[in-house]
Image 1 (tube, helix red, strand yellow):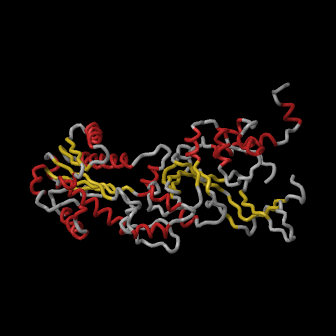
Image 2 (tube, one colour):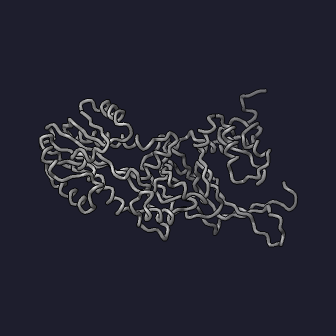
Image 3 (cartoon, each protein chain N blue to C red):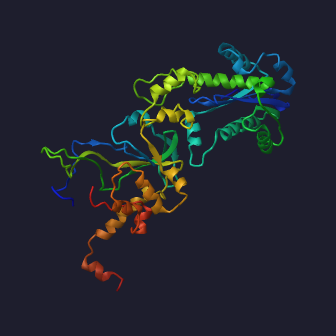
Length: 152
Length: 296
């Protein structure tokens, strides 16, 4: 890691705001970093249509463009965390490498410009990694290894 | 909306229809296409009803004429109200649909609706949008049984089009007057003015309602050139779909590199840019835009 101090991430859920159904991933880069009146201007509406992949579809508009979206629950045993840099009590000008939880979430609504979300979307497919990671990292017992038909 | 709840007795007689639009130029509010139709045998009486091009009439007079034509059993009418959200969305699609195309589709929709209702349309008069010759060809191809008259200023030449222009204009004015803003921020008001970009009331409404992140309320047609002058000073927004087009390349790696370049964290190290481009990453991760993050 970087020089100086240890990096820590303080993950907690109790007493922290839950942003579920309010986390949006837009197909654009907004060159702004900070709060804005999202709920007053960004008004997703369910279309009443369920996509061919069983995803309930929503529509919204941003800067005049039609966005088509769907809300994906995070996989079981996963949580979303919004992290902010910990303000250190020391009068250090160095930026701290320690993070604390500012909010949590259990789902993400992602939006496509002009096309209906489907399981072929990059974002949807990114979750495949979780299955792969689990398979890669689950310890293999000697018994399983023995019974495996694979030989080198 | 329209007089379509009951099919008139005269629907099976040869009928004429006029089509006109209201609210094509304004930077906000819906664009409305209106139609008016009647039996051909009623044409001469129609000419005596003092319909004139709606723009030359006072608002009160237009309202009065609209109410009278609604109660006239020899006249049918219909409107197609195109929401400003729909106008913006179509004109800002990845494959953009221009306003002429939207207008043509709306007019053809009105013809189609009358035919499906069982109105025997033989002649349709339309104020032109774009080149009259090309427009006429397009219409005749779609509806071969109908004679189309496409003309400039058709609304002042043909009473049936004048009537349609009243239907459209009154509907548009009412829609703007009664508009309920989707947005719920404080300090918003509905003193829109005419909606024309040069109208001082409209200008001051736009100035007051611009937003550095969201641009404007969705009543505004974002695709209008007027809007961009108000966006100065607002947060810049770059769209993935625009980048795809510029790049002219479907190469994933290249696209991701560009996306990274436009991010607002400009002090990215070169090595990170290469990492972000997907170079050297397994295809599995490239295809899912996943990147290994060792520190943040």
